[in-house]
Length: 267
Ligand SMILES: NC(=O)C1=CN([C@@H]2O[C@H](COP(=O)(O)OP(=O)(O)OC[C@H]3O[C@@H](n4cnc5c(N)ncnc54)[C@H](O)[C@@H]3O)[C@@H](O)[C@H]2O)C=CC1
Ligand SMILES: O=C([O-])CC(=O)C(=O)O
Image (cartoon, rainbow, N blue to C red):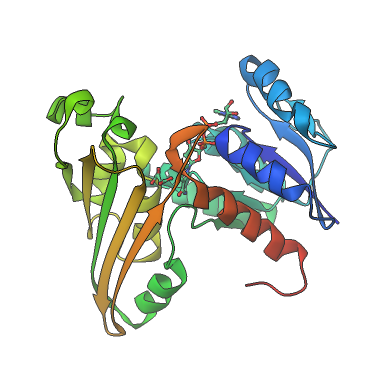
C-alpha cells in the first residue's frame, strides 16, 4: 500500500480521490489546501468512504511515499520544492509553472539534494511518450493548437482580443512561442509547457490558442516532425463540470500515474 499526500483538492483532486476509493494499493491520507478552502474541501469530501485529513501543511515528521500536486502554479514553490528537499518523490500537474525562469533548475537541485525524483504528468494531453522519444533522434518542428469554448478564456488576455461573451465564430486569440503563451496565459499553459519540455523547448514550440463559441470541448492538436518521421494528434477533451478550464483526462492521468507507482505492471 502506497501512502500519498495530495496538494490541492479542487476539480482534479476530488475526481482523483473518488477514483482511488476502489484501489486497495493506494491511500491518500492527507490533502493540503489553504486554510480558507478547508470548509469547502471538507464538504466536497463528505461523500467518500474514508475521507483524507484536510490540512494546511504536512505535519513535521510525516513522510508520505508520494506527494501529488493538483493545486496550481504557486503550490510548486510552496509545497513541491520543500518536499523534494526532504526526499519525498513528487508528481506534478501544474507543469506550466516550470516556464518560470530558473524553476526547472531549482527543482532539479532540490531533488538531487533530497535524493529523489519529480515526475511531470502528461495531464490533459497525450503523445508525450512519442514526442520525448522523437526528441532523442532530433525534432524539426512542434506546433500546438489549443481550442476551448469561448467562455473558458474569460479572465485571460483573450478578453482584450475579442468579446468572448458574444463571439459568433472561432477566433485566434494568441499566436507565438510557448514561452510567450506561458507568460500571457499561465492558467492555460500547462499543455504547451509539457509539450515544450518533452520536445523542442519553450522558444521553438509554436502555439496557437483559439476561442470557439461552437465548441463544448477542450481540443488539443499537436503536429510534430523530425528524424523519426511525423505525427499529428487531435485530443478532444471533455471539460470537468467542476472546472471547465480543466479536461477530465487530467484526472485520469493522475490516477494512471499513481497506479503505475503501486501496481506490478506499469503502462
Ligand atoms: N497538466 C495539465 O494538463 C493540466 C494541469 N492543470 C493544473 O492543475 C491545477 C488544478 O486544477 P483544478 O483542480 O481544475 O483547479 P481547482 O481550482 O478546481 O482546484 C485547485 C485546488 O488547489 C487548492 N490550492 C490553490 N492554491 C494552492 C496552494 N498554493 N497550495 C495548496 N493548495 C492550493 C485550492 O484550494 C483547490 O482545492 C490548475 O491550476 C493547473 O495548474 C489543470 C488542467 C490541465
Ligand atoms: O485541461 C486542459 O485542457 C489543459 C489546460 O487547461 C492547460 O493546458 O492548462
